[in-house]
Image 1 (cartoon, rainbow, N blue to C red):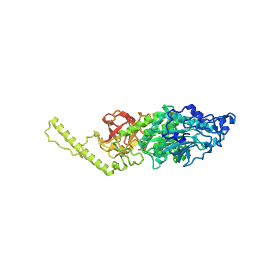
Image 2: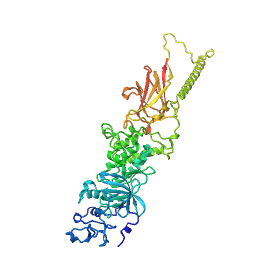
Image 3: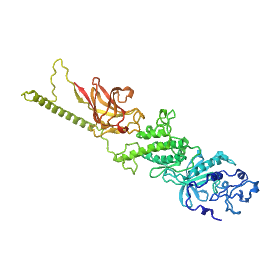
Image 4: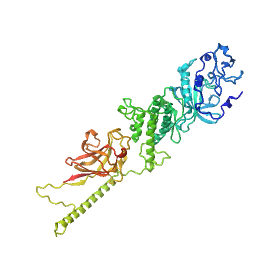
Length: 597
């Protein structure tokens, strides 16, 4: 008799459509009359069935006529004296338990009760390598002698596995073997199993145990799994990635579906929600879907508002990019009113994640914006590389004001001297030129109003005004008043023009005391940006409390905006309602001048 172990030598082959699905269904649903007679269906390594003989629970062979015509299946090479242990005779599963004659269970890593599944790290004793095993356990509701519901559930899940045998993608573990119900050597409480290659790395809970993952690393991790879901959906398959313990993170930071056999009711929409849940967890350390799954995986359940709505990642972790925050909430079905921003397909999510990853690669030469997560040891830019922020240094600002005042006095002296020389040239007067000291003022004739002159407004502070977000690049907004137009502040790059995602964003400028502002100058390289100039009663006023003074479209370079200096104001808001090229605006410098009588 050929040894059954020898038939399983070598690597277990992926089921690339080589198993007939009708035969698989027959194997998954044995003849009920044979089960009623106490017989046990078995398969030989090639899947052949011998209908001429059957084996009872006490190991005796019997013919079909011995039990009233009921038939059962045993391996064709079985001897009459050979004892074949039935599935009901096997011992329950535990660490160290054998699973058929090839696999040995080593460590239980999780479970999915809704699918009746357990996840194990096991060992392939033939090839001496670790494998990932998904066991289909008999549910308490299935614990009956005939077990119709459990067999039907397991049969549907196993048939799904057979259909997905030809699916291979770097974002999903490769299917190696399928153990159908009734396979020789399965424990009594196991209805079937799927064996896949082992994914090295860490579980999702272990990945976020030390803190949230950097936003760009989270996007790159989910991109791999989103690509796998996209290809699976195109082939009419689903992954079942909406359970946190089915996913593992590789050492190079890729999220991979490690444990197969999803529950029968899972759909492509569940995969999209699972991708959103994975991104949410990497950004916030909280699982947003099932509370029971979160507790079982060792994760914290996501916070919700009193109305039941999820709190967005940006609310829990300031610094999360707007595009990732919007994408995450859209995939979880938490889009805005009217469904704006809802993500319906894995392909759409993969495309947007790829855009975020590509944009990050383009900006790799610049230090990243701090998003609340510490730098990893292999990051190019470390937290220690960040230079100390001296933009709010009082001594530096004082020196800057003194320098500007000296420069202004020098300009006035030069202009006065040039004016006198030009007047003497065209007036023909032989009177020697007289230089007027800068502090001196010409006498004002009676009845004549003094001429108004402009002086720069000193001690201007700025902050990002963003009622609908967390403030784009708030750490760099002081660059617009540092006196250097080459250092700039910019908005985030948006996927759509305002007001698709938000009504606008602005810069609130505040003065030490109310000033009669007569002119505003904006230096910008984003021609076409639309700015509303508004006055505000306080620095933290809402948009509705501000008053519109003028609307201007910025030109390349400096744009001068004349203002009414009749009413002094202490706060001026530059409210951007139209973004520049590429749905992004950049401002290098803003300055104010006040009327001086």
